[in-house]
Length: 160
Image (cartoon, rainbow, N blue to C red):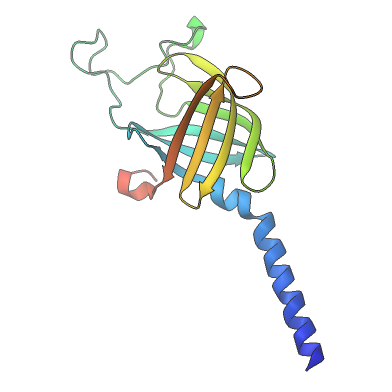
């Protein structure tokens, strides 16, 4: 009886440890819709860090009245003119985010292609379906912006 109890405790501890170690990858990796509903970011693990790519845009082309109406949206506000021709769809907008515990990423960068601004980046899991991404102008995270994203099923948006 005592042997069974010890085995149960060891099995429970092993399960707990495995679920804790894999928590960050299970939660950050996936498809996340920005709460404004304008875009979906795919967060992937690349080596020891995480990156995010734009995989869906509510309005993937410029609207009437724009000089590029009907054309795919470009990274036209990038301060580096050689990069302004890149499509926003497929663009890497977050990178080098490294784990800080099981629910946070730090020391990365976040890029806003609609304003051509690059920020210091962090991310935090709020719950299984919510991630909060912070882009800051300073290391302390005082000056910047925060956006909340909700996990989505990519097939609902035609994403494979």
